[in-house]
Length: 342
Image 1 (cartoon, helix red, strand yellow):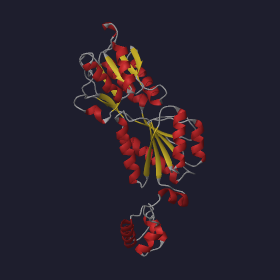
Image 2 (tube, helix red, strand yellow):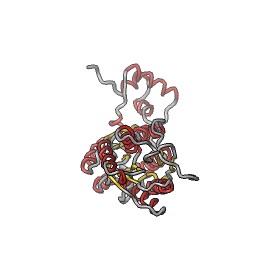
Image 3 (cartoon, helix red, strand yellow):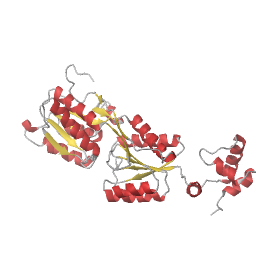
């Protein structure tokens, strides 16, 4: 094994001070173009890689952000992950990605691990946290922002779409389309997104003098959604839904596949299907899913802005609670009411 290359060795090769080498590899630090060129040339020749963690100990800033996501089955999350990572990298931050289950104990364990990396901040995408770990993060001066999840904890910033308002439009849309047996497939019932979407959906139906006809829980997961669809449709003809709203696009696409290829039903002639997210797959011609759009660009912008503000000016930053307007995107998977305008 070869000798480890140090900053001092790079400085000697480049003919500069060790502090100059440090400035070149510190985001935001100033160094002349000539110095940068000499240092990077020497670093390349020697195979030098700066020790980010060691620099964090000295500077008190790691320029690293912990990003926690629950699972990657849902096509919404890879898109979110890419956008958040790009936005943070544009600001000179490195992203550490961690996977977490829905169990608070497991999530707290993941957060304990994240804190050991001396991250400057944490983004939790569709993941909740316990009050104990939230207090621990605050005590260590590590700001946390929730993305696509609201949680009623003191001092916590969260950014979501307007889940209630978006789902309310779905209720009104399906009622106006003349559907009589409107079903709902719920997500994980511990999630604020699930809670608010179902409440908004029921409110939209109530405004039109309708009630939810049937309901099953898909838990935002493949297997759960398949079971939920079979539960709703393994009934006499007069009990089968003529419309289904799924609490995520991921589940709505599974609904469409089961209805078409297992049950032989036509969409939207026999059953209208609507989702929530407007994940990239929703617009594919084979699905053309009517859905509620989460405006991811705005959500990412608000999330990153809030986190960086908390990092840069922690004494003056106040927690934000942001719910971004979510429009209904009408495609071909649901019957369109006559005269409907968005």
